[in-house]
Image 1 (cartoon, rainbow, N blue to C red):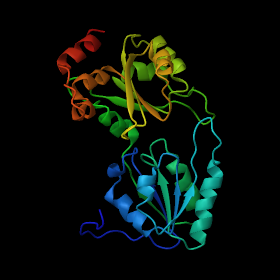
Image 2 (tube, rainbow, N blue to C red):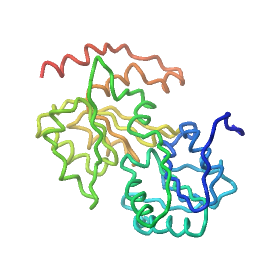
Image 3 (cartoon, one colour):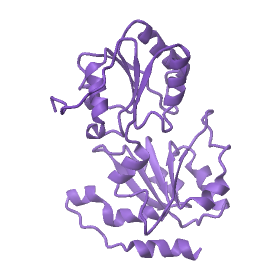
Length: 280
């Protein structure tokens, strides 16, 4: 793609910071507003999950890495936010590029607050979040009217890096038919135990997708009771999206990437998937 289609595209002005979601990984899932931002930026401050294929669309810009990955040396959030302020005050056209959507477990809200507090004007460019797109690339719809009418998105760790304690796990377990967990691989054993203790079946279907939407994507199908052991046995590594609920079984019929490789879909009746949950 060399030219954007006709549109009244917004201008990234000097001294402004745009907080932009780059999507879950596949460069094709970047929005056109995101591409427009890439082409105008003087400086791009980007996260660990932003691929080179996306950065290549902005050869005119300086690229500054500010990635954070669990368990690895990472930039400090306050330093990142203040760096954005500094660049804006230098009169740069600043693009803060984050994986997925900046306002979905991406700390974009914190960065936006800091910028506004320092008098820096901002624009937010939403992105496609991995909790939806990553599962879609695994053949899992997060909603299906014959299977589930609710979905809950949760983070797998709190601000300290521990498993979230402020969440009402009993309420989540009883109230949401499908639970999508971001950044939950490290604590999945504890999370699974809490969900089971709150009433979810140990046999509940679980799907775990890593490196979602990229060629290296891997997905395993397991159960709530076995997911921690199966993740370890498969040697899966983050980033990962974890889907808990009977919607995960729809992958058996809707794994379109496997179909591209020549596999035949399995026959799954969504109504049959719903019945065990209703019986409980």
